[in-house]
Image (cartoon, rainbow, N blue to C red):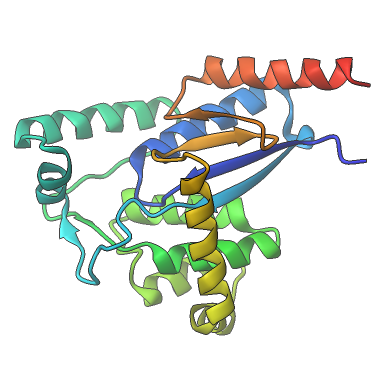
Length: 219
């Protein structure tokens, strides 16, 4: 019987709070020594499903979508950079940085899950976008990053062309929205409860401890 805690992490690869939230969750798992007791699956969520192929300059995007001033945007970037550094992740925001379409990235992540490389690829894409100034909407970039985790260019091209995978990812996105997920990251525990937002390490730790205790009581 599989007694692992199932962690569905609904997120997007261009969402800064998603990598911060994961780093907090990762630290909680590490602190509790639970890596052999959890099963992580990344679920697709596009922050901007209608984003055109050319993307949108980040500050203009934030101003349009959230009404943030240039000063607000600068302060948010500084805060995110510090929060990332606290957990070993480097944000390299730069002038002209764009928010881009991520549908193809989610197609590859679905394939990566099937071959046991999903978290590895997800971390690679976070780093490519936020640390290495890569445009993760470009298939050439995605193929290069996937290659770093052992996925071939031929496999990538097949995934991009596969209508069944496209339909599956769109269906998953719709499913999570229908289940009430409107913000990311959202971590769902055993498909029964969830936490939304980049919760502190201590909050994730408590949630995991509660689930372990519940499993022990149900034995």
